[in-house]
Length: 226
Image 1 (cartoon, rainbow, N blue to C red):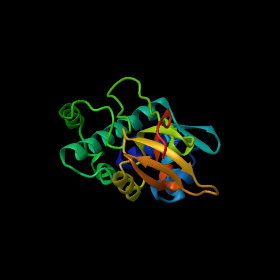
Image 2 (cartoon, helix red, strand yellow; image 1 turned 135 degrees about the vertical axis):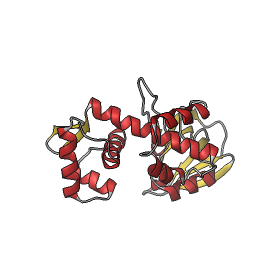
Image 3 (cartoon, rainbow, N blue to C red; image 1 turned 180 degrees about the vertical axis):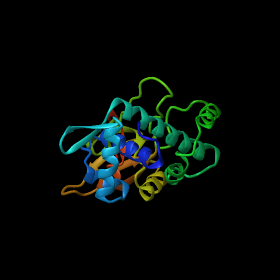
Image 4 (cartoon, rainbow, N blue to C red; image 1 turned 90 degrees about the vertical axis):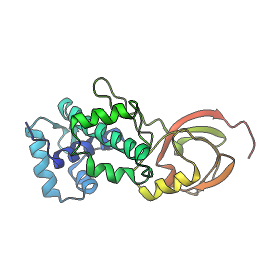
C-alpha cells in the first residue's frame, strides 16, 4: 500500500480533477499541472501503479482505480470543506481560499474535518459551487452546461465556477457571476469575439478564457429585450 504523503495526495487529486474535466490524463499533463519534471512523474506513477491506486486503460493514459478514487475523494472533501470554512468563518475572499486550502488540506485530521463539517451545518458545496464529497456514499461531480455553449437569447443559472485562476475569479466576483446568479446571454461577437451577458441588469463582455470557467444550467429563452 502506498503511504498517503502530501505528494501522493496531490497526484491522486490532480488525476481526479483532470478526469472529471473530461481530459485525458498523461504523464506530460501531470507534469504540467503539478509543475514537476517528467522523471518525477514517472517515478510517482510507478509507485501509484504498484499500490493499485492507478492503472492504464491504454499505454499512454492513466486513470484512478476504485481505491485511488476513494483516496482522491477524501482529499477533495478536505480541500472543499476548508475552502468553505475559510470563506464563511474567516472571511477569506473566494479567489484566495483555494491557495490557502492547498496548504492546509494535508494536515487536517479526521476529527477536525468532522468538527468543521458540523460547525458549518454540513455544507454540500464550496464557495465556487463545487460539490463537497460526502463522508460516505455516492458523489456526483456534475459540471452542468458550460456558459460557452449557451445559445444567444437564453437565460442561464451559474452552478459552479472553476477556481483554477484566482485573478479571473476576482473579476467574475466583481461582475456578480457567482454560483446562484442568473445570466442572460444577449450576443456573441463573430471570429472569437466576446460574449455579451446581462447580470443583475448590467451588460458585460466576457472573453473566451472567462466564459470557459463558468458552468451551470440553461433556464430557457430570455423574457426581456436587452
